[in-house]
Image (cartoon, rainbow, N blue to C red; front, side, top):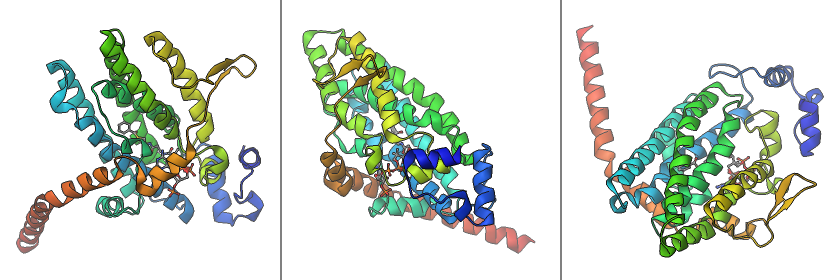
Amino acid sequence: MYAQMVKATGSDVKSLEDMTDEERAFQERIDRDEKIEPKEWMPEGYRKTLIRQIGQHAHSEIVGQLPEGNWITRAPTLERKAILLAKVQDEAGHGLYLYCAAETLGVSRDELTEMLLDGRMKYSSIFNYPTLTWADMGAVGWLVDGAAIMNQVPLQRTSYGPYARAMVRICKEESFHQRQGYDAIRKMAEGTPAQKKMAQDALNRFWYPSLMMFGPSDKDSVHSAQSMAWKIKMNTNDELRQKFVDQTVPQAEYLGLTVPDPDLKWNEDRGHYDFSQPDWSEFFDVLKGNGPCNVDRLAARNKAWDDGRWVRDGLMAHAQKKSARKHAAE
Ligand code: BYC
C-alpha cells in the first residue's frame, strides 16, 4: 500500500529501505491503520505537518465565523437568525476541538493564535471573500460547508487519534450546516425573480473560491505525497475537488441555478463532470494576503485578541492565586 502510494504520487517520500528502524516501524503501524496517540514516538516531520494542518484548520473555523457573523443581525427572520447564530457558535466549537487536538502535539493554543495573528500560519482562502447578500449565507452553507465536509469525512480515518476523533464530531455538525445552507438558498432560488437573481449571483461568486478550498492542483501540492503516506491526508486535492463537483452540480440543477462554468459537461467515459479549473494565480495571490478581505479578517482577529487580554489576564491571576493558596495549605 505504502509503496503503491509513493509510486502513485511520484514523490520524494522516503522509501521503506531508506528509513531508520524507528521510522520504518512507525510507517508500518500507519500502513496497518493503527492510530498514533499523543505520547507515542513519531517522526518530527509528522508532528510538524499535523501542527500545520490542524492549526490551519482550527484557524479556518475561527476566522470562518466572520463572514457569517456579518449577517446575524440582518437575518430575514427570527428562525433564520437563531439557526445562523447556532451555526456560527458551532464553528467556534470546532476551532476549540482542533486547538485541543493540536495541543496534544506540544504546541499551545496561545502560540498557534499568535502565529495566525502575525501571519506565520494560514487559514482557508475562502474566508477572504466577502458575504455581500443574504443569499451568500445559503451559498456559504451549501458550497463552503459542502466542500469542508468533502474534505473532512475522510479525515475521520486520519492516522492521528485526537485529530480523527475531533473530525467525527465536527462532521456531524458540518452536515447539518450544509443542509441549512442548501435550505436557505433553495428558499431564495424558489422565491421572487429578484431573490432567484441573488441566489444565482451568490453561486457565481462562491463557485470558484469553493473549488480553491481543496488546495492547489496535485502537481503543485507540496505536502500531499508525504501527508498521504502518513495518512494525515486521505485523498489528493484533485480527487476531492472532482468529488465535490460531481456532488454539487446536480444540486445546482435541482435549484434551477447555473454553475458559472461554460465548459462544465458530464463525461460519460470518465463517469465524472469535466470542469474548468479556478484561476490559480488568484488563489496564490489570496494566500499572499491580497484577497478582498485578508486585511479585515486579520484586523478583526487581532482586535478580538487584544480586547480579550483582560479576561485572559484575570483568569491567569485567579488561577495563580488559587494555586498559591493550595500550596500554602499543604
Ligand atoms: N487556503 O501542499 P498543499 C471549514 C496552502 S474551512 C489556504 O496541497 P496541504 C469551515 C497549504 O497550507 C476548511 N491555504 O497543502 C469553517 C500549503 O501552504 P504551507 C478548513 C491553502 O496542507 C467555517 C500550500 O497551500 N479545512 O471547515 O497538503 C465555516 C500548498 O498546498 C489552501 C481544513 O483545513 C487553502 N484552501 O493541503 C465553514 C482541512 N489550500 O502550509 C467551513 C484540513 C492549500 O506549506 N486541511 N493551502 O505554507 C487539509 O486537508 C489540507 O491542509 C488542504 C491543503 C487540503 C487544505
